[in-house]
Length: 207
Image (cartoon, rainbow, N blue to C red; front, side, top):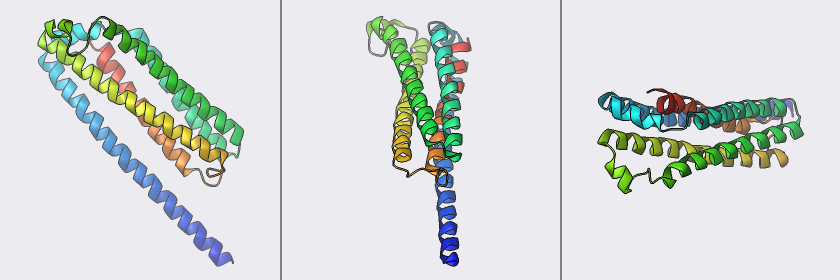
């Protein structure tokens, strides 16, 4: 009986290690994706410094800073949720996950209004106003919409993942003895936060 328990525990630890390794490999590919975009942005900014500066001056720094604080806070709540489940506090873990998802929605709503303001004034690819912009400034906005749009997609996916983790906690599929899935979900969310921490100064602050 003890031998079976030991073997079972060994298999569980091996599966947990495989899940963690798989998540780290996935995160690495995501970092390569956004790292490539950051590199492309930096190159074009070097080639069009004045146009990129003009474009960044029209971004709402307050909204960008607000979203930065929202995501940093959400990283804290998801980390505390993992700590709560490790201590066996299922209710607190669920509440902290709910807070994280709520903060994700706040981020998306803020970004909706930020994009909506620019779209209201026809400042997006394909409009006459956009076509009248200098080529470098137009390129800035193309990269702005693409990179922040891709990041928003990651926020949505992350929120869905955390919602699924919440369901798993409710169903006791994630417990204080088996919480690797929640850890992986938290790692993905931290990546979403990290990407924005680079996007914010790159797009909004560097003139």
